[in-house]
Length: 175
Image (tube, rainbow, N blue to C red; front, side, top):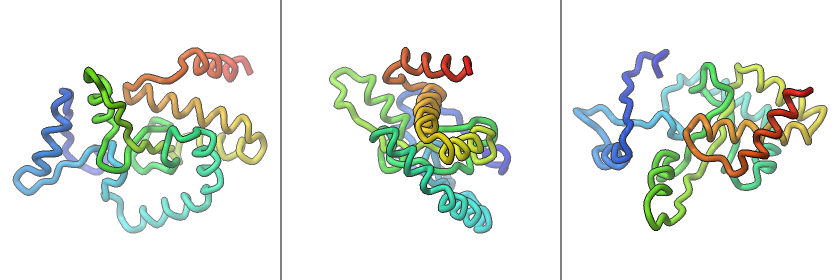
């Protein structure tokens, strides 16, 4: 967002998400969450590039989605990432941030956002994933799980099995 010259509001209180959904805009400027599925900020050329790359890598993304076993709605390339390899975004009305807030409430209804794992196409891990998909699909599946858990941690969310995550990281480091 900063690279494109957009102003960013850092909202750190739990109530912020609710307030912005109610306000929607201020003086004609619409609020958009950077973790929303489609910000609509790309040029037509950028949209075409990402669409072609998405189609070219569809088998890899479908495989990763399958290996993540319902944890994410889909896996796709990201236009928002510059340095990080992955991030979690959401589709639909319930955001990832809203899921965190609702899950922390007493008598939580276990609300779940429709999560999307976005991968930075310019990060070296993406090239490694493509290579592993063609040479060692089991390892590509393990990488998908590690990247998903990494994205959750970056987002400040708990991971299901920290011991398994730690063991997978140690396995990779030992090789």
